[in-house]
Amino acid sequence: MASKKRGAVNAGKPPSQRQLRVGEELRHALAELFRRGDFYDPELSAFNITVTEVRISPDLANATVFFTTLGGGQMEEAAVALKRASAFLRGQVARMVNLRHAPTLFFEGDTSFDYAHHIDTILHSPEVARDLSGQGLGRVNGDDDHDDDDDRDDDEGDEDGDDWDDEEDGEGADSDDDHSGKGARRGS
Image (tube, rainbow, N blue to C red; front, side):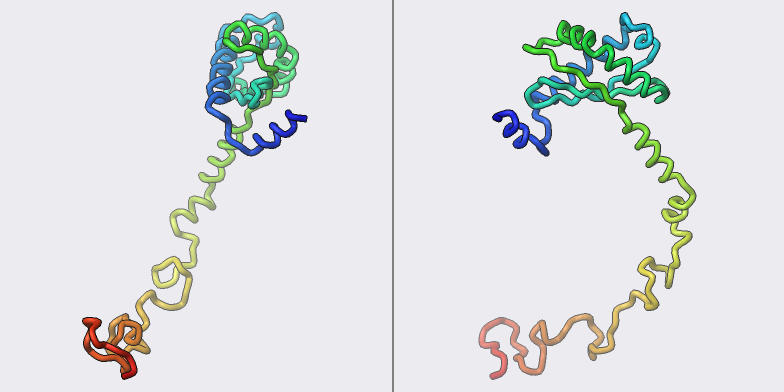
């Protein structure tokens, strides 16, 4: 029951410094394992795997390993091979990283590169380039606010031509011309 409460308290919180540090150590250890490539599974050794991030639970019992393959292809096959080899990889990580208990490893394909490529494609599309250059906009009077009027000040209700509202700064018909604050009373 205590674990449910603790999990509910940590939900939505950013990872602690300890979680970040242990996750980074696990990432380095797994990257070294994949660099060496000495696996018993020939299918796993056929993939060129890069570990992009490791997120670890607050109790350090579970770690989600985000990975990508060279070129981004065959992600499903690599995920199946990694799931099959997760117990072996956990044992190898336990030897390399000094932790009381080695975390259970869960592997998930990293789609952030695909998402970044998608955003990059959108930003370089002709429609966005046209919008950024200002050429497809219905510009009126050389400004971007799409109105029918110029952006000049409207002086219709101001006799002296300045932009000040005479009643607000004390120069209306009911005030004295003394602006020193001594004896200046309205309506006397």
